Image 1: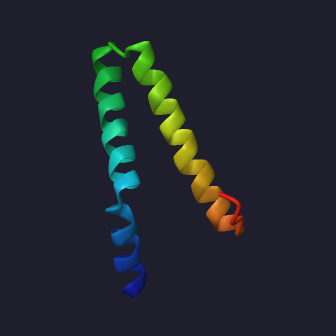
Image 2: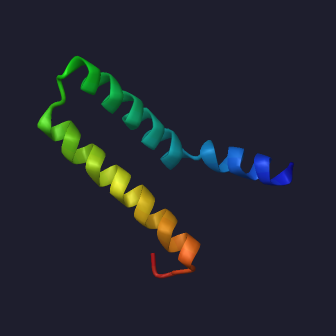
Length: 64
């Protein structure tokens, strides 16, 4: 149960909330077929940063 609360707390961090909000926005814009190029660039950078940082933390890389 403690693991559940830790994951929930991590999900409510600012970077996770921004990533979730951008993903929801991306999905809505995709359905409407109206994705601006600037949004796509920003979304790609945020998602890449989020997953690279998560991968580095799992591998124990402290240089990030």
